Length: 500
Image (cartoon, rainbow, N blue to C red; front, side):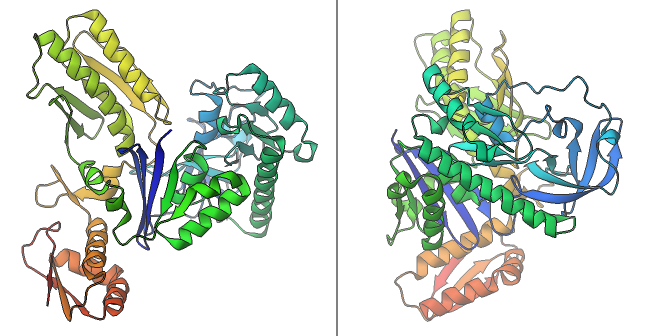
C-alpha cells in the first residue's frame, strides 16, 4: 500500500491528509476552538426520562443534555460505539435479553449519576448521543468496560487465525472483568504485542474509574485522543509508507502513543523540517481547496454536481464535453467513473444522511448493474456504515451514510449574510486561520518594517478578539509591525497583504 499520512498542526487547527500514492483520499480537520467530544467518557446526571420513546436526557456538562436510549443501557442491547460496530461487521444486529425490562424508568431514576460515553456529536438542535457501554479502542483491540463478551472481528476470515486470537484473549484471566474485541489489525501479531496493548487499555480504564469516583456529576472522566493520535492508532496500517508531521510536539505525542500500542510503526513517523508548508511539499494544498467546490470534474471530461440540502444530499452526474460512439456508451463510461469519484467525495467531505445520486439514464440493464457494482465496490473503502439501494430504471440511487459529525463543508462555512443563506461563504474562524497561514508564509525568511493585512471589518474584529496575541507573536518573530486594516464593503473572503 502506497499510503502516506500528511499532518499539518498549528495552534489554531490540526489538518490531516491521507494520500493513496499522489491522490488525496481522506481529509480531516480539527480546530482548537471547536472541541470534539466523540469517545469522551462523562459522569452524567439524569435530568429527565421520556418513557414513551425509551430515552433519558443526561446532563454531561455541555450546553445541551445528551440523550441515552434504552438499547444503549441494556446488557445485551448495546451498539457499543462506531469502532466496535466496524470490527463486529456492518450488519451486526443488536440483541436484547428476554427478561430485560422494557421501560427506561426501570433502569434509571431522575437525579441518578451514570457513567456514559459520547458516540455521536451534537448536530443542530440535537444533543450528543450517549451509551452506557464504555469502550476504549486501541490499535489491535477494543476494551469494553461493562461487558464480558470476547470476540474477533468478522473481517478476519482465516478460521485458523480466528481460533488462535480467540484462544489467546480467553487465556487472559487477569482481565476477566472486561470484554475485548480483537480488531482486524491484530491479525498475524504475537500474543506479547496484543497483551501489552490490552494491559495498557485496562490501566486507562482503571484510571477513568478512579477519576469518575472522585468527581460529582457532571464531569469529564476520560478524554479521547485528538485527531492526530487517532489517525496514528486507527488509520495507519502497517503497510503504510509514511506519516509526516510538521509539529515537534505532535510528533513526540504520536511516538509516545505508538510506543505503547505499536512500537514497530514508530520508524515510519517522521518530523517534517522543510521550509515549504508541508501540504505544498506533498502537493495536496490545491486538492484540498477543491473539496469545497460544487462541481467536480472527471478525467473523461464529464462532471458531477454535489448539492447539500436541508433534508438530503443531491448528486447529479453529467456527460459534459464527453461523447462516445452512441448515447448509451457515453452514459455508461461517464457513470462508471462518476461512481468511483462519488464514493471518494463522500468520504473526503465527510457527508452523511440521505444521499440521492442521479446517474445518466441507461437503457441497458447490464450497464445499470455494472455501475451499481462499481459504486458498491468503491464504497467498501469507506469505514462509515453505508446502505445502498438498487439503481432504478431512471438511473437514481438512494443511499444512506453514517453521520457522526458535521460535514467538512458545514464546519468550514457559514450561511452567507449577503444572499439570505442561499449560498455559502467561509466563516470568520476559517478566514482568520487563512490570514495567519498567509502571514507565516510571507514573513518566513523575509525582513519587512511594516506588513498591512487588508480584511473586511467583520474579520478584523474577529481576529483582534481571538488571535491578537498570535498576530503579535508573528510580528515579533519577524521583527516587523503587523497591522490589520479594515476595508469597508470588502467581502469576508477577500484578504490582501501589503509589505513596506
